[in-house]
Length: 238
Image 1 (cartoon, rainbow, N blue to C red):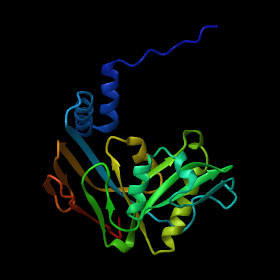
Image 2 (cartoon, helix red, strand yellow):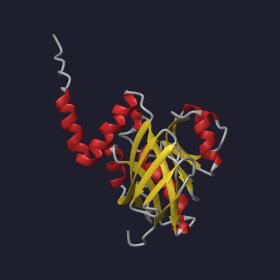
Image 3 (tube, one colour):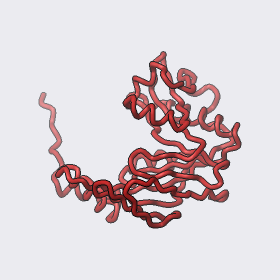
């Protein structure tokens, strides 16, 4: 019996799929960035959407669900960190600014993680510091990751239940984050937890020169080396 092999989508079909998923403006930025990378040009284009995700008062899971998965804080230097798709310099950078890593474990192996920062967050993809205002109301979350083999299970919800309990104990009401406008899947995942888009920023780099336009202050920034503060207001009725 011969198994039929689906034909690879044509270039036109792939372009249409990207356009349908991202919309015209975001698709144009995505294609520009992709072309620059393939041609190895010193040009980069990134567009972020900022979301606020509520910290719920009740857990996402019932007490008997997902009990095979243990979620706990992973301390710097733990061997489990080496099993994450991260390099040591990245880990050092994150812990260096006070980030907290929650790891989800099943049968002793780490299968997922979420990172939180309670203070300002220095972005590592572009030169910018994200500052929530008022800071006491919101944390910053990033790099929510679940191993592909466990994405249909309880790891994602167990991670957030533990992270939310940590935030509630500190009076935090919202978890803010930035999501690439080119990553529709991540937007859907955050949306499933009640996250709402509250603003955006676009970064265009040419060698060391970086131009930022944003819906938050400062709305326009042109820098060579400076890391501007981008103030993200935390609206209590978001």
